[in-house]
Length: 343
Image (cartoon, rainbow, N blue to C red; front, side, top):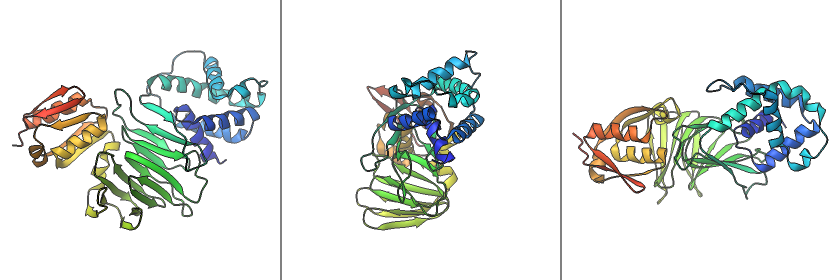
């Protein structure tokens, strides 16, 4: 196991994104004293890059360490005699354990684990959905070092390690990918009926189940998009390919890619789009059904505005309604925007 893979495994443990099989493998490595130097270096890297939101609690750090260590050891390992070979990790791990306990109390979102039947390696599925959906973007590091920014209410399915001839993941929702370069092993994203293939580049994929299209936007490099039978197009920076999921037709357009992926930054921008499209984006972001009492009017109105990440749904709705002299009400689980005036 490489240092990069081990660091990714530890990161998934401390963020609560580790599968039972991965947790068992990690615990066994700790108990056996395997990869001691790699473990030490990986934990140090994670701690060096950890940026807490506030002060760590002034509590016995050794107690935190023991609590975390007992959590990651399966029952078989817990019953074994103490392994003294891991004591050299204590200084780094006590600090990391305290950070992990603190983070567990404040991290929002539902994290759950599912097996992937098409891949013998256990898969991790991360869904940013809760009873009250979070509005912040979740940043992930995949086993190969690729980085992903995952929209709220989106989910990504990927194996614990990319052991095959390709690096394959499955996306539902929207995500921005910054793929680690590997000329020998293509990175493949399955979204809806489309397959996007790259070697190392940066791009955005929007594939919401409720939409009738999959949209791929490139910020760096070159991306190939295909369906189950043919290549639909190859796009480069500031180009976008939209694929109709009903009839398979594809269209290509020039776009401002930076604007298209602004959702992953500190601010979220709606850039000269129809109010109808804005409503679609907002309901996907907040996990709430939103509709207009007059869809034709909503389709004709244009909107350009920016919201800070973490802005509440109520704030966003109030801003939009003030702009269009409209009002909104909550009717059961549905929000209705009424009396929209474009001018």
